[in-house]
Image 1 (cartoon, rainbow, N blue to C red):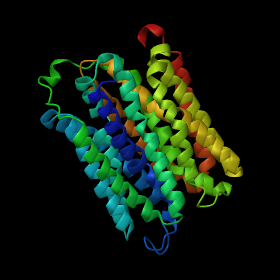
Image 2 (tube, rainbow, N blue to C red):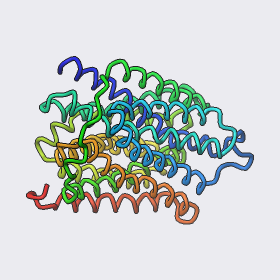
Image 3 (cartoon, rainbow, N blue to C red):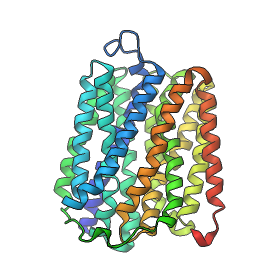
Length: 381
């Protein structure tokens, strides 16, 4: 890679790592501690309320997705990545000092929006700053930055124990550091003139959008409730963050997304991701009986989580090479519906149906859509 390509890869991976691996998913990691913290509520936080807040974090993600292309059209694609860093920092700070469920929710939603602001603009930055031959690998590397964020969050949580505010303070500091690095290393790129001159291929985007909906729903379930499953299985509070470390380390498989899509095509890679995510959710449904099974479920989940994120970016770039950022934004907006709805629905039904049954439903749906994608005729891929 040339110098500017390497700097874009490192800075982009840092920003995405903090926004996705930390700001977006730390709520699920700290959820068991939040539920019974008397400093937030004397009676504890109910499962429906926690599910609503979790869904709200993904609603914040949707707001960021919608806002990123609008800001990029006026200020260039680097601008939304800076806004994402600010949202991550301020949101995490609010959660850190929260003394009520309302402040907690506001901070979590604002922090969750960070990921929406930063993901799609890197497709445009890669298109403007990197050579075509290295773009798939570059986009995969940036997406896989999430692994570093997950590992850092897990390690901090292990060291902090039940002090969930320390974890969120780390998210705030990490957001500031990543945004500063991004401003120094990634050149400002002028807004594209005539962005609407190339209509998006809507028919071709339908399949990536379907994948995005189911993928986001499955990922939201995994990250929101993995720590709860670990608690039920008997893992101590100090050991539960190991799940995030496992997901982060094993998630480095995302670095091979570029090579996998070149060999198999993005549709087949996406289909495999959904099938394996379904297996991981089914394992989480069983994992309440065994700490070992919890760790296995986390490893299976991790093996495809970041491949799924990266393949969506690569896929939309292939489908709409003239406007990859906008194509990715469209797929993400549609996909965010799954991320918003799934934890809200599960949280509302959890008291009556129980978490294992609801995870099994998610597992079946994810696997079925994966099989359906695998059967898409090759000429339409």
